[in-house]
Length: 176
Image (cartoon, rainbow, N blue to C red):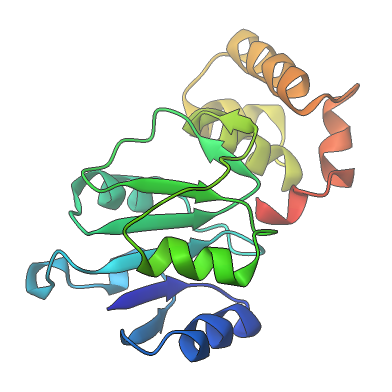
């Protein structure tokens, strides 16, 4: 069985129609799945494009669930994200046939995205793109302003930005 979390109808239809072996179910969030009744053979695909799904609840669920494979479609990977199941961060630009082979086949060969963000950096980027003020960001992340400035600088280095406001113009901004 394959669970897919996406807002992209074409991606869902592509996965649904190109593989015949397994049942494909579209869900809105990871908490919609009842993991107590499922086998280990379940695969989960999380599409982050215009779908900011990687929040605290999802991270906690990812830590606890035990499925065959979790595939996250994103132009970045989240370092230090723990899970009992194999986590694959795959670029959304991957060809659909390669993506299907990652979903179905046991042999896994793929290119991990070059940009690695920590979960706190991901939340910080999300807050900046959503135009939260400094006080709101420091309160929600429970960090000082100095730590926030350091994290911003690290993000700018990783994404090769001159100013943090250039985040909005990046091609990966719809993923936050």
